[in-house]
Length: 116
Length: 115
Image 1 (tube, each protein chain N blue to C red):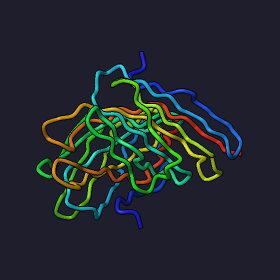
Image 2 (image 1 turned 60 degrees about the horizontal axis):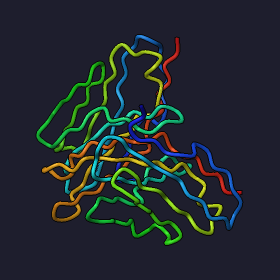
Image 3 (image 1 turned 45 degrees about the vertical axis):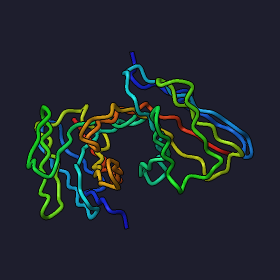
């Protein structure tokens, strides 16, 4: 079974629409993340979330919002989609460690979003 | 200019050969350095994590080295296999506050192993 699974794999939509990407992890991790990989292939953090704290990358537009119904899920909602939102979005999870910063990240397979 | 630079951008090698990928970084204060393998259409998978006190770490045919003084790391792949074809991403973890950190990703080196 896939440890971190996200759906859909591909998402094609029109500008101005609202869409969601779902993510689930069955690793029992306490922290989940959303990353964006743009056309230049750089991965950039968008959000990190555990049951205590949501950390938002200040460069992320407020059209993007994470929703966590429980510890195993972190969905990404995007309102009023724009052409520049086209990218691959990766969900990831990790387990907090006493030595902060050494958590091993486990990534999903990505969702390729194309905004037309 | 990205603070984690990788070279070469792409590399083609014959199956069975060895290769070395490079990573230079300027971010600080340094916490640890990671190498990830990303197959096409998949998410990155962790290969190694090294702190400043670790000079080398192996994971099967993958050996990562770290020189925290010169801020350089390398990933050596021995006896390459077709399945090694992927992008290899260098990631540096930087301490960004009390108990918090930030990951900075390189652009990756795209490795193609051909028969």
